[in-house]
Amino acid sequence: MSHRLTKGQVLAYSLGNFPTTAALVALGTWLMHLYAPSKTEAGSVLYTRPEVYGLVLFLVMIPAAIADPLVGYISDRTQSRHGRRLPFVLWGLPLLVLGFVAVWFPPVRGLSWVNVAFLAATTLLFYIGFTVVVNPYFALMPEVVTEDAQRVSVSTWLAVFGTLGQVFAFMGFGLLIDKLHSGVSLAGIHISDGYKVAGLLVGLLIVLGFLPLLAMIRETPHTSQKEVPFSFWQACWETLKNPAFLPFVGPAALTGAAMALMQIAMVYIVKVVLGKSEDLVGYLLLGLTTATMVFYPLAAFLGHRWQKRQLFLLSLAVFVLILPAFLVLGWIHGLGLKLGVLWVLVVVIAFPVALFTVLQPAMLADIMDHDTTLTGYQREAMYNGMQGLIQKIGWGLAPLLQGLLFWGFGNTINRPWGILLAGVAAAILCLAGLVWFLKYPLQK
Image 1 (cartoon, rainbow, N blue to C red):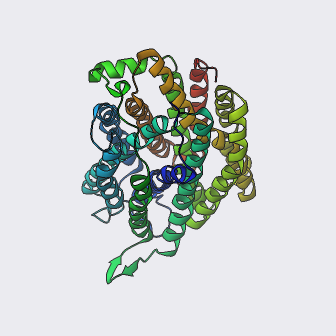
Image 2: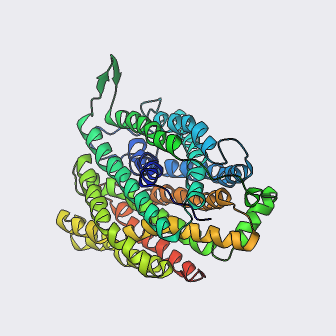
Image 3: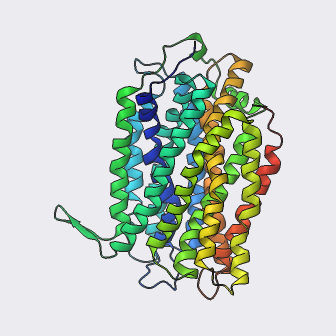
C-alpha cells in the first residue's frame, strides 16, 4: 500500500536535516581552524598540531563508523508502541547536543595533550549521538514515503533544509567568530569567543529542529516485513550482497570526503592565502549554498525525467574537472588567489553539488527497495548504518589528508601549497568515486 505524507508532514520531517547538517558542516569547516590555526594568523592559539588533529579525527571515525551498522541493526529489530525509529531520535538527541557543544570548549589554552584527549572524547560523543539520531531519522523516509515521485520531492526538501543548515554553519559561524573575538556575556556568564557562542546556538537548534518530527510523524503499522530474522553479521553481509549498494555508497563517501576537504581548505584559503577575515569565508560559502539552492529545482526536474544514475555520474565528472582549479589559480597568480575568480569557482561548482545532494536520499531509497525485493524484508536502518560506516571513513579522510598536506607542504603565507593542493587531492577522491560508480547497476 502506498503512503504519502501531507505537506505539513513533509516539512516537519525535512526540517530535522537543518540542524544536523548545520552541526556536521560547522564541525567539518571550522573545528580544525579552532584547534590548529596557521601560525602566521594574528592572535591565533594553537591547541594541537594539524597532523595530530587529522589523525585524531580519523581514529575517532573508526568506532563511530562501527556504531552505524550496530544502531541500524538494533533499530530494524526494535518493537515499541512508538515504532522502530522515533525512540532513537528522542533518546539520541542529548548525546548529539552535548558532544557538539562541548567540543568548542578546549580546556587548555595552548598546545597540550589534554586538548587532544578532549577533542577525541567530544568528537566521538558527537558522532555516536549523530548516528543514534540520524540513522533512524533517514530510515523513516522509505517507510513513510513509498511513491517514487514524492521521494524525489522529499529528497529536494531535505536538500533545501540541509542547504539552509549549511548557510548557518558557514555564514552564522563565520560572522560570530569574526565579530565576537573577545566573547560575549549572556545572563551574567562570559563566553570567551564566537566559536563557543555559535556552538551553543546550534545545540539549541538541534533540539528545536526535531520537535515537529516527533510531534507530527508516526511510523507505519508493524508488518511481517519488519520481522527481520538476520543476525548482525548476516544483516551486514546481506546488505553488502546488494549489487547496487557498494557502487553507490563508496563513490558517495569519497565525494563527500572531497567536499569536506574543500570546506576545511576554504577557511585557510581565505584567512592565510587571501589574508581576509572569517566573515568572508561565510560570504563565499553562502554564495555556494545560494547558487546550490537555485539549482535545486533543476536538479529535481532532471531527477524526475532522467535516470538518477546518469545525473549522479555527471555530478562526479564535473567535480573532477573543477576542483584542481584551486591549485592552478594559486600557481598562475603567484600564490595569490584572485577573489573574483574564486567567486566564479564557487558558483560553477554549485550545479554538481545540487545534483549530488538531491539525488542521494532517493537513490538510497531505491537501493533499499531492491533489497526488499531480494530478501523480502524492510531493513532501512541497517542500510543507513552500513552507509554511515563507509561514509564516516570518508569524513575521517578529509581532516587526515588536510593535516598531512599541511605537515608536508605548509599552511602559511610563505608555504601555502598544503592549502592549495587540497583541490587536487579532492579531485583524485572524486575520480576514484567516478570509476567505482560505473559499476552501479540500477537503471532508474
